[in-house]
Length: 484
Image (cartoon, rainbow, N blue to C red):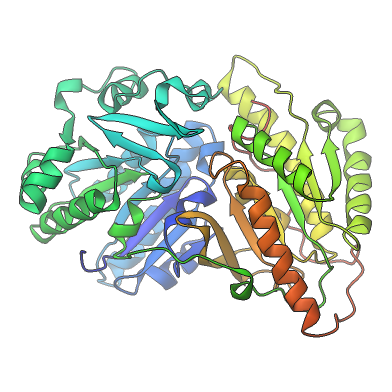
């Protein structure tokens, strides 16, 4: 393993921390809490930018403004700059070229030339791996080139290539030369080790892209160690990766799996919890079906056409909140957006529709949160960000661990409203886990809530309509999750 380096991870949804534990997560685009972390050598700070839900120009501006402020302060204080990571989806959706380029631009404005971009999209725990430069996703037990999966048909970030060199050329609009893209192959990693990988990295100049092949953590560990060699030589790289590569970059090994005894449900909370589902990928639909079969749930389906009706929307959301709060006295509840997709040919218009639907789902969670449910699960990548930040008002949190190895994180809020403190919050991506995973997570949370009730009486709860921090406002949604 490499010695821990300081990492600043710009995460385009909240799911990038699934492979790490005991790291800080900042949910606001404020440089001060970020600086509180990265001023300390060897620390890792995730900043949830929500940029996958934004048009490219906005995503670039978010990355540029935040990193400029952070690096400017560090330079003024004569502190070392962190390694910059642009963390995104392991199935290749997102602003793959634009975001790391924006980070490189900020570094070069500070006089730091960027030699290359490491492109390592693997999420090994979820069956996302790269071999022979071809990226794969394991679906229902069968590995498939990712360009042949439904992820590649995303309305906003669709693509056709599974070979990562071809993919980068495709996503660059042809501006990248395929022959200029370097590759770190499995043979390089396993036969040549750190020296061979370091030699490949030395060939990177002038922002060259470097594809990282990996099918297991040992591969990524070797690449991280080789990167340390290059960093010691004064070379600079920016990383674009899925969740797995962050672990060796941060100097972590292994995962922390959580059981009921590890989850604290605070006093004064309702007996049951809420699952909010925004993701529209096929796996989420199957997981939701399994949850409904296994548990007696109170179910609320939010009709998308009604949510898009400005006149009907407000009363419709208020009614859903009231019904869910009443139901949580006797059963868990699940709220989801109706499964039909509303598409347009314009990616920005698709994002706008998705944002509108997400706003309504977040407003429901925000209303329910004031009644203090026992726990909240948000299903879907950007849905998880919106629910955490605007629905629950979480501004900063610590990643406690995961429910499965490297999958599905529990956030412990460290800066959040009183109604959120003591309520476990689960970040559950749309495209992760087996078909029983959602039901299994709810089982663990319910056992934790039962333990809390057995340990003592609940205190009186506030009126769910009382005044309090209102964080739910218009914002954004994940193109994988809502009708786009």
